[in-house]
Length: 593
Image (tube, rainbow, N blue to C red; front, top):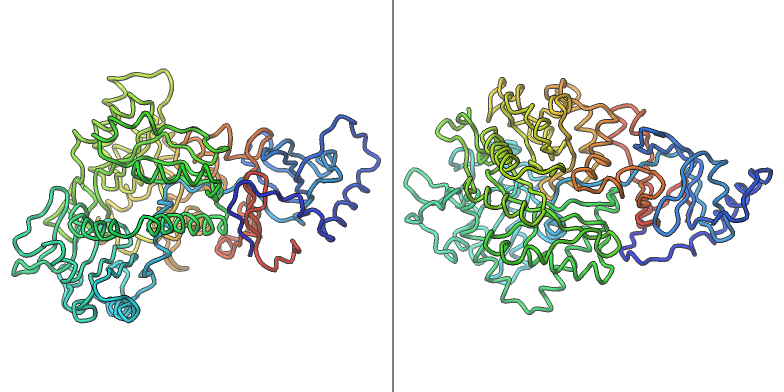
């Protein structure tokens, strides 16, 4: 495997390789009888012999692409593109392999993805006992008093309910014994709930008398004692203590940590064919750091960032943070992010009717309607897109109401392309409103199959069928539906999300309401041109046409034609970004080193 992070990398030397030189000679010989204009400028990179899916409806298929100065200069047949081959051109024979625009991750957390790779990974745990053992093992190498952190646990995906428990959630009794000398903070897979041991709660001053914050819940046992589970905004009670400890570290250590997180996230994305990444909420401070790294050429993929910060800070500083195509198209910041509810898995999604498996609750409203409306007005004033996290049907309805009100009060002749992030569970009456209002449903295919094991428990079968992950209903009603993974909630792998989008299969014997599947073409568009459209970037990326950025992924399977189950075996052979090879799979038989 080769991963290159600098966007200044010179790849011309690659074409001097002996094998590629042979390919070059073959191409030149094949077209020796063709007239070539003496004024035709040779390209830096030419891909030939490919099964290329362009996502351009005017020319959906091609064999070859010519790239120069980071842009596509021509696309067509091998014969046509041979005119762009010169003595210094790097020529790669794709040997029939499938190429398409680089995947655009439509909603995930870039720095969070990198950070998740530097903590305990709890995603694969099948029981609470396994997690306790992971933490106990970590105490052996962590100095007493230092934090042990992890992410990825999900009580609905364990083999059995832990004992003791409260409504299926573990108490911290076992963890207190496993880590008596360390504060422990373990974030739920959704990011909308956390677990803390007794040590951490004492540092935060949390006890039986601590009241629930607005939009959050401290889960307590029948005696009123906190068990260690903190839902939604209540997580901040523990997190602020952890953040305070982090801030006491030397500045150089903090900078190294942040840079390492960006590096790890970049490498992971490139390995999985992602060339652009829509970051679903970073603070003003994080945006400043990303801008610095962009200046230094240290962003491995193109970032489009939503700012998530306090309304008061935004009001005074927002104008200074707008960036479009900054650092050679590697950083754009033109959107605001808010969350109006929580997650379904944590019983935090805001519903119109109570949960079937927790009838005392209809979820949590995590930000007031007035506060989100204020953010929307800031977006209009500063020409920023507005993106609001809404998962439950009540949350989605309230956000649609806010958007509709803003569009009427502040009309515009141009579409604003405001977004609802997730749009997971909708009331049937609200489905047509997305297309009518021009609101983008920024969804994640993998959430459907990952959550399907517990969705009917939360919502019941009728509500699940009518409104849960209804991609096709939204598309059929005229809405733009985009795709992503919400990493690190899920693996950032677009192939898994693509498979979920076109099959909705959990196993060979169970498919979650298959009437909502997308076609292969729709699913690819949701990961390319539709994501580009959702970011006002459809003129620079998302399809392979002359003039657009040369961001390309080469795969070992044809995502349009291969058997559905074969999709899961798809591997990334090569990721090209800005016309350079940023990742190449090890020991690829079709691309010798």
